Length: 157
Image (cartoon, rainbow, N blue to C red; front, side, top):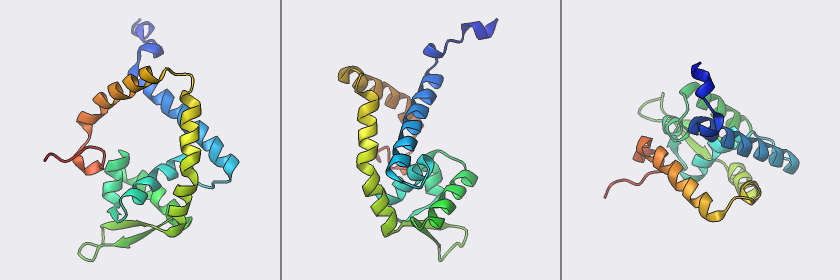
């Protein structure tokens, strides 16, 4: 049977997904313990606004590699929490610009050390040199699929 040959330990897709879930679940627990009242997914959507204030909602979709409807829900929740504000473009009312509020900046600043500590804890048993190789290899898979628009890949000079 075909499925007998599918070993999760040999599947890069499964391994990448599982690591992402482990990190997200750990971070959610740390946020709950610290009294942070947003989800990890909402926090992840808040970061690009922190780094690139005034990006469009469409650009946020590209950065997060998510569909418009999901990002729209995330942005609406962040707006309800008072962490971002949206403004329509003067030229095209369908285009929405996203700006982080002072409360949003404070939340990112507050959670930054929580996130870094969580990362350190989750990989403390991993050999640092092997971890660097792992990150390099994963980046080699990811990078060809990114556009310069996402803020993750440099524009050609």
